[in-house]
Image (cartoon, rainbow, N blue to C red; front, side, top):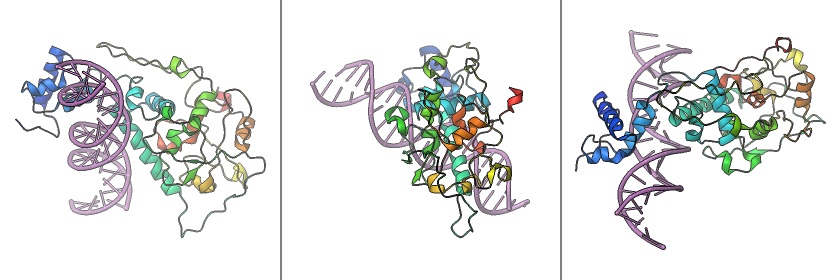
Length: 303
DNA sequence: AATTAGTCCAACCGCGATAAG
DNA sequence: ACTTATCGCGGTTGGACTAAT
């Protein structure tokens, strides 16, 4: 029995694989080895085809702003179902999406690490008393990374906002699904999985949204004793978590989909500031540094 | 210029689901 | 109904590349 080859693929091997697929279609992967065409496992052949050789792949192309947004929202909805998410993204594989997401998680983890108060470093003056009228988001344990939104209770569905925060024991975060749901966006209807055909056109899935995307306020303000005049806290500020009690971060709640008010001081403030809650609102929960294309919210006069 | 740290990405592994015998 | 083979998915790893020091 011949040895199984591993490691990087050579161009000749790719050619053999492509020929095989042309002849038999993308199936019978294990027969490639049993016929002696390649010393690769069927698994390896399939992976190579799906991730690199398949037609219409966007190899070497960075994720666009639109793709970033798609991943963010679909991850919030589906959890780490990368294959499923990839079906909404022409030219992208589950591996692409997975790699993209994990790199953003690392980026965020770094941001949070850099932002965390240093043990020996004098702390900034932080407003630690809960403002009287503020409703706290229930504290949740950060779910394990491989958890899936589909398999979790609703309240635990904020994968993307909490799963990368394993460094913290508990974190109060906006439940992403609530935020997404609060917009009453029928995701399953709006984002149709794409079927790949040889000559498929690039399908834009976003124009169907009633609102433009993304709309991150240039300066997301949070309650602070100094007031936002002195402290225009921006999420991209690497020290932004210093403004919070790290163990008990308070973030805005979006209105529930039933329309009932879920007041939080911040949410109210946002209303006052005339920032409507959009389908994109949940992206407020991310530091801007985490993504490449999160643009500032245009001023209301520009709408 | 050399070294280090950070990022990206291709490929592997393990596991569960499903099909075939 | 049971066993085995195959496939597909998600998690992880390691090397290549780039930026920072």
